[in-house]
Length: 135
Image (cartoon, rainbow, N blue to C red):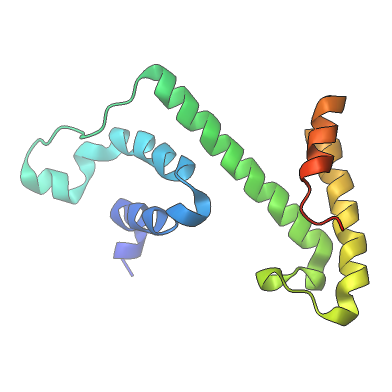
């Protein structure tokens, strides 16, 4: 149980989820890791190992922006999941008897999402055209 509360475990968990969460959160955590590098048990046991990664200020800004976007996307997905409730299509499958209700709620989710994210008519059109759940 103690290992689960370590930075090493957190980095392994993030790495395990790279294909799901993409690299933004992992890179963001790497930026934070530099601050605690010297206090990690493996680094302390090995002496004074330098932090192995280098990020420019522009790279760090881009990483932080990507991580913020990833977290925002997860929040939006969670909002959609809450809106659909038990109709949320696990593994992309909706039972036939729930199809019409799920479709109605997905249309509502689409409207709410576009209202939140589209800042121009061009963006609204782009969202409309790329929405995956329309017939």
